[in-house]
Length: 293
Image (cartoon, rainbow, N blue to C red; front, side):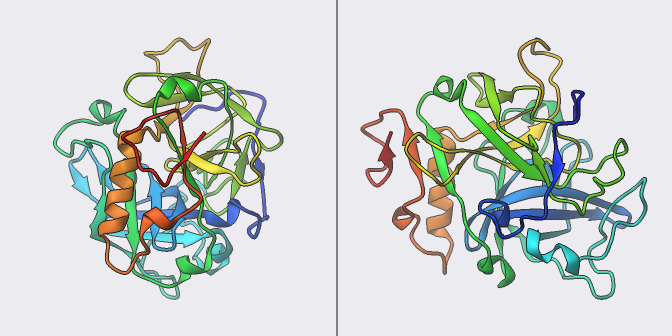
């Protein structure tokens, strides 16, 4: 991941403030001793949107054997990171909450290729977790914001929050919820045809923030909606003058796949009844229940 001086993030303890109360820490255990930290955001009482590589490591062709989501308010119940230089939270330590995502309940809304290298998946790095436990249902959910044309997202203001693992700042140790930017908002400065979007330099991120929801408040609204997830640091294939960190934008095809999966999951309310979702652009073939902005 890429940090652009000055540091534009801030630790927050506003766990009950929307949408920070919908942000979750994700712990992924790929093998004994291979435990990683990520972030996600709750979009239904039992669904978390996050990065694809939080569930599958294309470099090693490995699927996470244990996955756990934990709300911001539940952070004190987690065991601390193992060491300051390797701040992993190992699932299964005494007193630690257990894994709560079954591998079969991990879905990839885009064509995430589990048989190739990570660079091939740069435009597909998004996943949907379905949880099996109750704690997540106590948290708020965030609506989704989908785009008919990715270019429409350019210049929109954005904010994100997650759990970075930092060697540059010891207070960012995988347990601190960090808001980026710490004050104000960032901006989407570029999008591409593959569905990626790139942020202004004040949206600083580091490892551990992968999968963080990125949100925007539409004109006339008061509540934010998630328009994508953070997945990558600086991409050298794009001019450094116009972008820093980047993520996967929720285009209409990604959105429809997510909604179809939510509807297919038993015990989950019909996604068509969720009023928080909105569509930017005009598409007569899209779901009629969405707000045409």
